[in-house]
Length: 326
Image (cartoon, rainbow, N blue to C red; front, side, top):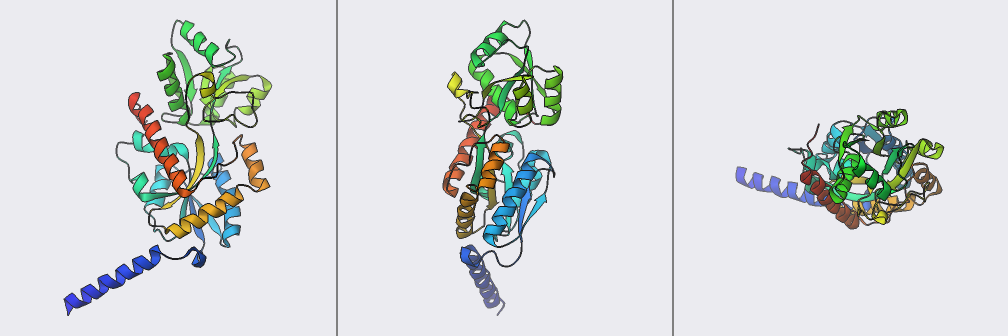
C-alpha cells in the first residue's frame, strides 16, 4: 500500500510539474502581481529605467509589476534570488550586461549557473562607454591618444568605475591590442570617477555615456572613442574603437531574464510585449536621454546567443589579464 501511495504521489507531482511547464501564456498572468528583481540599489540608472519598463510592460500584460531592488556584489545578490526563484512566470529579472557576462569569470564560486538557471527573455538597448581624456591631453582620436601614451616616461593612470567593470575590461582589451602601458585606478561608481576627471586628478578614463555628456559638451573632457558596435546617438561624431582600428564588438545592454523553469510560452509572450514597448515614443525618448541606441529586435534564442558570446569574450579578457575581484 505504501509503495502504491508513493507511486501515485510521484505521478501526481510529475503531472503537476508538466502542467506548470506547459501552461499557455493566455492563462498568465492572472494569479498575482509579477515581481521584477533589479540587482542594484534604488535611484540609479538601472533602477530608474527598470521602473519605466515595468510600468509599460505591466500595462501590456494587464498585471502590476512590482520592482524589488536587491543590490550588492555587482548584481550577484539580486541575480541569485532570481535564478533560485520558482519558474512560474511571476518572477523576472531586469539586469545589465556586465553583471550577467562578467561575473562568471570574475567570481571564484558563483552561487548559480548563469546558463542553466537563468532563461534569456529580451535584450533592451545597446550602447558603449566613452574613452574620455582631459581637455589638456594632446589627443583628438584613438591613434593620437595611443601615440601620446607611448611617449610618456611613466605609465599613465586611467580610471573606471570599478574592478571588473565594463570600463576597466574595455581598457584592458585596448591595452592588449595596442601594447600601451596604463595603470588602473578603480573608483566606487561613475559619480566619483567623473568628479576626479573634472578636477584633473585623473586625466584618462573609460566612463559611461550619460554622466560624462555635460563635460564633453562643455569641452571639459574630450571623447576620443566609444566601445561597442555603434556610435552613440547624442555624439554621432565620436567613432567606435573598431572604426579606429582596435576591434571591439561588445555592447553594453539591459536585459530581462526569467528563472530556468519558466514555460517557453510565457518567455515568448514577454519577448513579444517587450519588442512592442521599446518602439513606443516614450521609450525611444528614454533611450535618447540615456545616449543609448534603440533596442535591437531579438528573439529569446538570439538574445541567449548574445549572452553566451559576451560571457566568452569578457571572460577571455578577465583570464588573459588575470583580473581578480576586489
